[in-house]
Length: 178
Image (cartoon, rainbow, N blue to C red; front, top):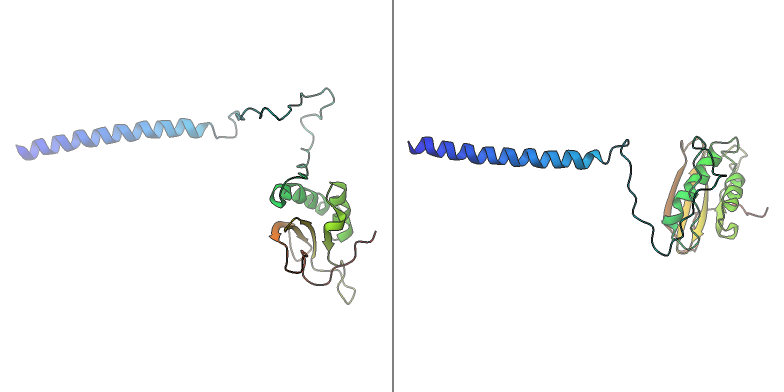
């Protein structure tokens, strides 16, 4: 008889655990449903010091390309990596994809400081097109670095510390004198 009672009480405990786990699963399901792409996103209210711009009648249509991330002049290199990467991707999508000058010019147009930039040569020492080119923008004690070219595949962008020499790229770079 004791064995029968012990068995019944463990079934009740098991039943309670199962009911509890079902309740937890239901809460998780509802919580995760809010994360699906079809669910509306809720954003935190803007900070009191941040002005909120109202949409204007001249806003771009919904089917246009999203604008590139903005440059954050007072931000860190990491804060500006999205803007740097967007410029890199935009140039990569053009016929000038392996021209260092195109990246420098586009980064300057986006607001990056030309005097803080370095770029490697587009051609090897024997005159062949470079397998990859690198370009950089020094940002305080860090560097935004991009690498593109046939040997690279898709563009690569990253943030790295400034080298001991105070530069971002190793080796011989070309003067940015245009």
